[in-house]
Amino acid sequence: MENYGTFEEGNTLSYEDFQQFLDEEYKDVNFQEHIVPRMKDLIIDSILSVKNLLNPNRIHPSFELFGYDFMIDEDFRVWLIEINTNPYLGLPNKLIKKSSTFTFYIIFSFT
Image (cartoon, rainbow, N blue to C red):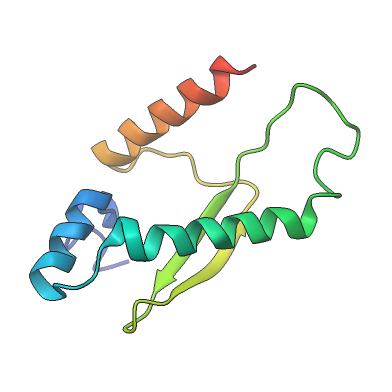
């Protein structure tokens, strides 16, 4: 934990900031076109693999919030590290606070 926050507040980058880094270091990589679709595919595959186990009591309306952790390797392959059924909901920085506020607004507008 000694390096926590050394490079960015809360060890978190926005998609825009990450794309800026990619533009500066790796000209041919577009986060939205090359990385996000693979992340979405992994999320869909993971949900489909357990869809029969989700909401076993068929309670409607209901929702479940998952936290997905990904890693991008040196060849820009996306790896699913873990899925958290109890994701951390703290607010370590402004970016997380903004995205969490929006996420909860969406969730609670459906309930």
